[in-house]
Amino acid sequence: MVLHDMPLLTTVALGLSGAFICGLIAHKMRLPPIVGYLIAGILIGPFTPGYVADAKVAEQLSEIGIVLLMFGVGLHFSIKDLMDVRKIALPGAIVQIATATTMGALIAHYWGWPLQSGLLFGLACSVASTVVLLRSLEDHHLMQTSNGRIAIGWLIVEDLVMVLALVFVPSLAAIGTTENQESLKDLIETVGFSLLKISLFVIFMLVIGNRVLPWVVNMVASTRSRELFTLAVFAIAVGVAFGAGKIFGVSLALGAFFSGMMIRESHLSQEVAERALPFQDAFAVLFFVSVGMLFNPSIMISHPIEVLACVLIIMVGKSAAAFLIVMLFKYPLKTGLLVSAGLAQIGEFSFILVTLGVSLDILPTTGRDIVLAGALITITLNPITFLGSRLIYEFCEKHKKIGNFFDMSDEDDLAHLRVEEIEDLRRTVILVGAGQVGGYICDHVETQRTELVIIETNRQRVEALRQQGYHALVGDAGTPETLREAMIEKAKALIVVIPDSFEAVRIVDAAKSVRPDIKIIVVDRYHNHDEEVFERHPVDLKVKSYEEVGRRILTYIDDMKI
Image 1 (cartoon, rainbow, N blue to C red):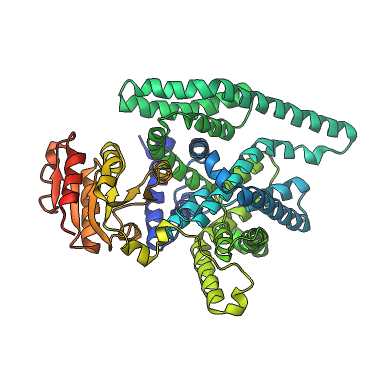
Image 2 (spheres, rainbow, N blue to C red; image 1 turned 120 degrees about the vertical axis):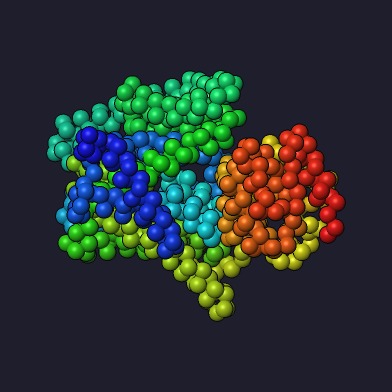
């Protein structure tokens, strides 16, 4: 059997392999991996020489990617996070979206595009990428800061607006046909019927889905089968989205978003997020690859002015609007610069909008290529915008005459603790992993008069720990950057309580490379073939007994001469 007889396998294999190689290269160049994924799609697309992947298969895989992306958005949607910054994020995001959409529609009108095409083009330029913004905040150690929370809240509002936009985009197709009163009446009826179906779906999910989905998750969890639990998460995400489309006629994206929101109500939402993440990552990569396959690189040569205009709307017009809004609300200069830098790019929602627009004949294929070119350029340049915002802030600090026009205060918290505050701590201990053992340590560490800094990869768990008053940050403890952010230079000990031996060794090696003299404690609960895993990586304390592990670690900390 030749490869051409297996288009699904070939597309997945080449798509993921190409995305891995190009994503790794992008990472080494300090660019967002999304740039690599899009380039991988371009390389196996119809507009470049060489093998051309099956476009129809890629499109179906991208639909699953959209569903899982939206499921993840719903699963991580937090009303509390939004309420904390609602005074700036809610009006700010809405005004910024309206401003960018208007700019896009006006430029599109100048190009001779119809109104509905211009509106969709402007809308696609108005929304930032969730993946790119969160990664940028983490790379610059801004996730835990008040400014970072404002940027995330702003992003949540943008995501909500885009969810609603996806519902009403099909109605834009009817705008061009409203040549008389009768067609206008038909349009109103169509929109009204769409609103009715959406309302019925929302009511159904709030009344029934809100009870049934968490119950299903809890019931499956009681079986203690990891495979069944993972399957249940995937089935709920895809099944609810499919059912919403077939029964209520709403978009797959909306169905997936609401299924994620309903499952968030379960006390197992963190476990669901952990199970969904691998699927979400894999299919999201295939989604970006499929978007890259649609991109015609020749647009850069054939329509350079249009591409430049798109980039200027995203990086100058939209960012300037966001900056002015933040300043009008009398927030510090640093907040305005951070928000405007974070929003100076577009991503996944923009891709979804333009793909839908082309399929409904709202947007010409040229418009899709212009938006994709704008996305590639702005995502690539986004690290530079963060650097530029920092340089502007430092310039204003040095030149008091300019700085006096702005509020120059800085409300950063854990990631930017002042040195004197750090030195006031009697002893700092870094804890990697906040599961059952880590939870025991958190609950009892105060008796040891020890300051904990917790590193976790699960963003929801980190937020829960912060609400309990702990210093917690999102990151990979196997990287020197994350360890430095966790103040390893001041720490007396590093506790590793994760079940993966490979990751544990990687973290120990990273810690020793930064602080060779730091005390290291590990929970050695690995498989038999990993018994000697730390023989070549000496640590100060290994604990095997699950029941006594928390108590022994705390006793060891208390006995340390510091």
